[in-house]
Length: 357
Image 1: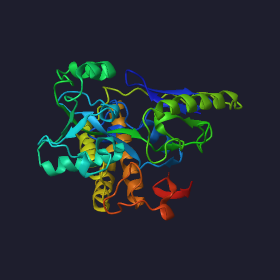
Image 2 (image 1 turned 180 degrees about the vertical axis):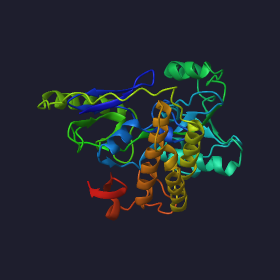
Image 3 (image 1 turned 90 degrees about the horizontal axis):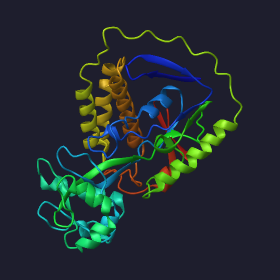
Image 4 (image 1 turned 90 degrees about the vertical axis):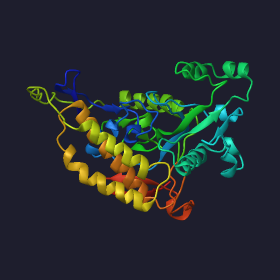
């Protein structure tokens, strides 16, 4: 029937319509290290959940292995083609290490590379660990010509990728799960559609190939638009009465600190490598935090609540999947279990179930 929004002045407003399309990206901001923009706070996921929509495959969060890592520099992706074209990964001792983890070394699948880097960072015992991406042995002219955008972006932060080692570490990049939809973007809630990063339409499975997200957005965005425009227009009715504006300026105290705690908790316990004990710890801590987020007043307060909810959904789904598959890796269940888990996870309320493909 519509949406309730906070306008640019923080005033609540209601917008009536006959159908709603969620295109709000994923929830990368549940992690302390992410390439996602600051507004990828799981808002669409939370809106759909509260509206009664089914969510699926929330445990599958893809971590890009090589995001640049420098203080006060936004995390941006250094593409896998840098490694495919001959780039090396080196630890803090400047030793190449990928040969220990996979026969393809630096050309291994991205989830393997991300876990390898995470392990190298752990064993280094450095206070602020990272590894290096090394292109210095490659022809400088060819590197500049082949990767002009990467070269320019790094030079903006005084890193010459043809001469300098590039500090990198993994970062959350893509939420493979989200709001369950059919091939036209329809959810189980009448009038509610979802596409691209917020949606779980089965386009990717347990991992995502490079650039497939762009194709997904184009194809499913168009299909959803066609479905919405051709469907019988339901009478949306009149907009509900507008809520009174907050007086004296609303304040949600302590939200940034709380968000930081959630992000750190998720990175350490429900990140690249997961364990039952760690996920149970995360779920308990998140559940205990719920009362602090029950009545948000500001935009940031709502984002904090949505980050919290998305984090809890990821953690519960990951705990329920007792295997390793694609972007979801558990130390206590390192193998894939097709007999039990060749299925999509589905969140309905607080319960996680598994449905056949």
